[in-house]
View 1 (cartoon, rainbow, N blue to C red):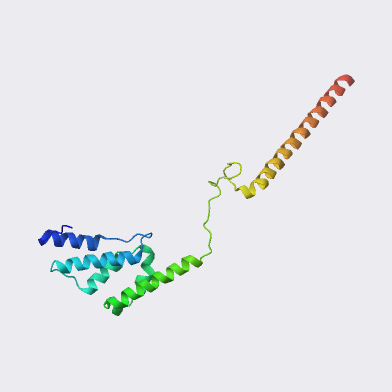
View 2 (view 1 turned 90 degrees about the horizontal axis):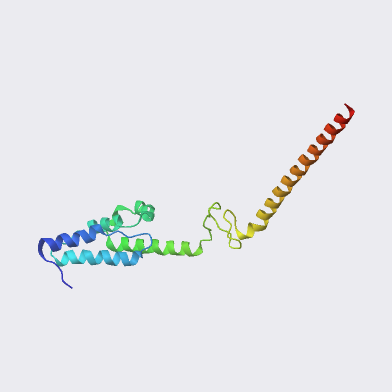
Length: 167
């Protein structure tokens, strides 16, 4: 692999180190290794960075979800590479265990949910019977209203006819 030497090599290595960001989906252990590789690359180019600067760069490159961890890291740990990486790996293990034991269900927006049974939007297949029952109940109420209106209309017509005969 070709590695640039001189100022461009140093700038390139520093860009890699300070421009690397770990995404939420990325593996933190791999990310630490990549960052250490960039640190070593700078040392090879005779432009090493201090351990403290390296660990601030490492902490800066972590995803937003690590902000609570970062805010809890004491100053003396940042200056000790072994302690900091050890704490990061412990936190990673804790997060993995927490994720594997989590029983929380994701919230689903019912207004966009699609029924697997009939493809209707706005309810789940398990609620389809309830939806159908509500629709039938509404239809029944509408029919009852229509029947009542028809009976009232018939009654008025009959009354008009009788009134017309009596006049």
